[in-house]
Image (tube, rainbow, N blue to C red):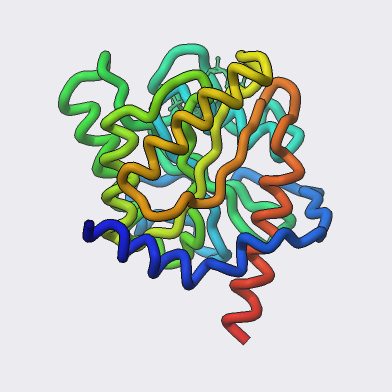
Length: 227
Ligand SMILES: Nc1nc2c(ncn2[C@@H]2O[C@H](COP(=O)(O)OP(=O)(O)OP(=O)(O)O)[C@@H](O)[C@H]2O)c(=O)[nH]1
Ligand SMILES: [Mg+2]
């Protein structure tokens, strides 16, 4: 299948990311740097970007807050469709965390959904500084068609991504592990190998160290390949 070779190529470029570095990344400063609807409106200063995407309400903004130890940094809500802009947060004055609107919010008007889809597509396809997209999946659910289609498009556009299974506190460890295993098998029906996979909880901090260490390893790798 054509997707397989795309993923193999992404994997070759990012293979070294699978090696765990013990960098003990710490976020000492997280500053809101601006909101945008198109790439031309991004913050003027350019730094490597790690962006968070996934279904509306999956926990993107909450995860950013958890990673930054600041519950008020990104706006969250129990109602889907809260984040409607691309929000840049400058971390340690060196890189950005980017909070994106969610996809798949069925209760929004068709025009509203289209608008969000355009904002997401514009950012993902055109940002020259996006080095890793974290695709968030609710750890209690199967991977839906909308998520799988989204992953396929990432493969087609050669966007490097990792997966984070969110809301890990909502299920017991056994049920969570079994469900995540199901999701991995679903991914392997379309992909030759799994991307890097993490489990998180914005409530308990589960996954924080692993995700931050991974970001650090990608940053080190990117710096090395630029020198
Ligand atoms: N128990 C639990 N609840 C979570 C977790 N992460 C997010 N939530 C809750 O899920 C709801 C949605 O969280 P958000 O972070 O706003 O989700 P989002 O993906 O940014 O949503 P949109 O911006 O609407 O696309 C909120 O009520 C959060 O408190 C988690 O890890 N555990
Ligand atoms: Mg949000």
